[in-house]
Amino acid sequence: GLPVEAVTQARAFVRSMRQHARSPGDPDEDAHADRRHVEKVAVQAGNVTTEFARTLLNGISEEGRALVFRQQARVLWRRLQRHPTSERRTLVERAPEFRSWALCELICKESIKAAADNADRARELADLALLIADLTPGEASWRWRLQGYAWAHVGNARRVGGDLPGAEEAFSRAGEIWKAGAPGDPGLLDEAQVLSLEASLRTIQGRLPEAATLLDLALAATPNPLRPNLLINKARLLEWAGDYESALETLEGAAPQVLQQGDPRLLFMLRHNCASNLMHLGRYAEAEALLPEIQSLAVQFNNELDGVRLHWLKGRIAAGLGKLEEALVALSQVRAEFAARGTSYDSALATLELAVLYLERGRTWEVKTLARQMAPIFHAQGVHREALAALKLFCEAAEKEAATIELARRVTEYLYRAQHNPSLRFEELR
Image (cartoon, rainbow, N blue to C red; front, side):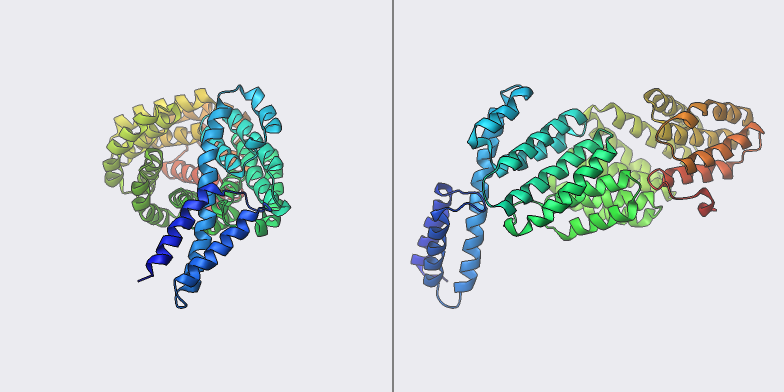
């Protein structure tokens, strides 16, 4: 219903965006020309639609420039990748074309990808992104915002590498300058990403209420492509809190978005976590029905730890379905694998689940043997004091051949929930 002239002007305006890309805060005359063009088109659209057209076209202006910069960033990143890691910082310092907010954003994403299997590479990329943020031109507030974004990714890389004090320091710096730079950001950088990364740190620190609050804030910052990830993370917190029904409901709510995105890794996490919660709720047959799809997805990644955890899930489901021999074989293999990897907490959980099966068959002497084999766990890092106290209680009972199925199950449930909540006491589950 708009005049032909207005549509023609609007199309010309959109085409012009590619020719006049600029960073936020740049003192560029093109910005004034853009606004004059917006006013011209808005007036031609008529008085009734003037404000709508003005708002829409100003939005297109920012999005158009962002699109151009993000396309250029991919080219710049390919250029940087041709050089050894040791030379990339020098290139960024010497060549102005690499001082791009979009390149910083892209390298931050690459850091997150690398964090899945290489903490050192994740940190190296995050540090490079921070350097670019420090050198990016524009107003100070915009540079602060970009630096805050990069610092959050530095913190995430440090977390993945096990440097929790360093991660805490990075997120503290990120929070301060991210907020200070808010007025300079026209909405280009994803706040949900920053909140989600900090939530991951709070989770591993055992500060679950803070992590949950951060995830809720991140979800409120939607719509964004991160929403399915955020919902899966929220479901994981609910599972660790023992609220399996709510966790399952959250995962079911995330399913349509995960399927729409078509990310196999995300779908693997969704299905695996659904099966885990169904198992906790005693719905073993439903959990078993998901195993073929989970197995098919796991094969695509060829990740050994994923394979171990999938085998663990199979063993636990088999135990719930009364397939004791199958469960004994699976859990014995999983326990040995975790022990070999030095994953003490998971090794303790698998040992206790195995103990339940032996107790159900009245094989108390084998439970005593398992308890004695737990000795290294009491000297391992990563097992907090309250968990050790619960394990000691079980081991003492097993040594006297007085351990019961009920005690083994209670300690198992406690360890599962206390892994990310070290303040939880065993007595609270009575």
